[in-house]
Length: 377
Image (cartoon, rainbow, N blue to C red; front, side, top):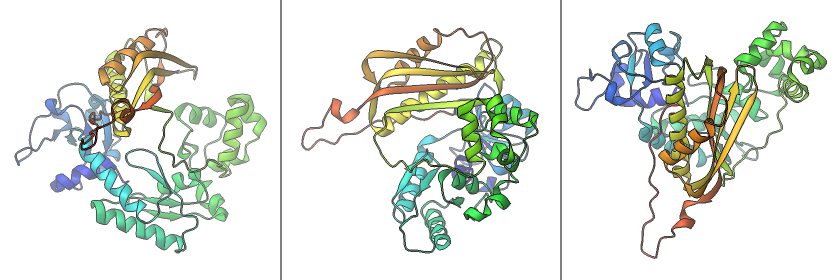
């Protein structure tokens, strides 16, 4: 979906179309400047309180505002941008609508989150481009929103293609097109090559995907290790053998975020604390949405030098409660020396059980699963 959260908000605030709009922060800290009752938006410069940006419209992105950016930094870049509070209930509503519209046409779907899916078009008799266009039209009819579709031989290439012609794009990539369409792109366009790996590749004069495809694998192994180098070698050539995963029975649920800059637990404590709580909240919401409880709470830290540390804690009883998850994850954090800068933080819940198995409704009862509101990560 194109700038999904911001696009959903523009359905509610059509007068803001064409303006830089960012989503984030707490509604309690938003000065209400909208003309109509119940509207809650302000200029980014007027926001009081801490927080991070969840997403931004394309106009705001052009000014340098990105997701996971601290609101204070975003305010320096785009002080006149409109700031809206997050409304995950609305985003989930439109997420369900767009996925349902797609499933009516192509039911083999891998759900990749609230605003993204992989679709298997194999075996469908319709012309591929016409089929993709029909999916786009169905999504717009169901939601009023635009999406961008990339059609390719595997998930790696489809993901890259879906970003090539945003917004409202449709890109169909044949295998023979990889050298012409994919190789000129920066290596960071490959999902899985982050800022640090991108910087190391740049130091080796490897800037484009084509540069990476022509690199000697022994050189990559020397700087990245055998396993990651093998992955780099394959993806630069468009090789990705991951299958579509359509199973609805998760073994674990996790949320993690890679920071725009490395953060130190001491000097950036407030930002890290807010992001940590937000990750716990989103994991709790994921559990409730999927009707699951979890007993094992874990955290994942990746330091600036790429060293990764994990810790787990198994609870006496399974839970989907935010505060319980937050406390357990905090206990895990206290078992890791926090004396170095961090580049990634993650929260994970495993040892899952179905909520319905804990309390099956009697005949005539209606079983409801309460949804925990999302928070920005």
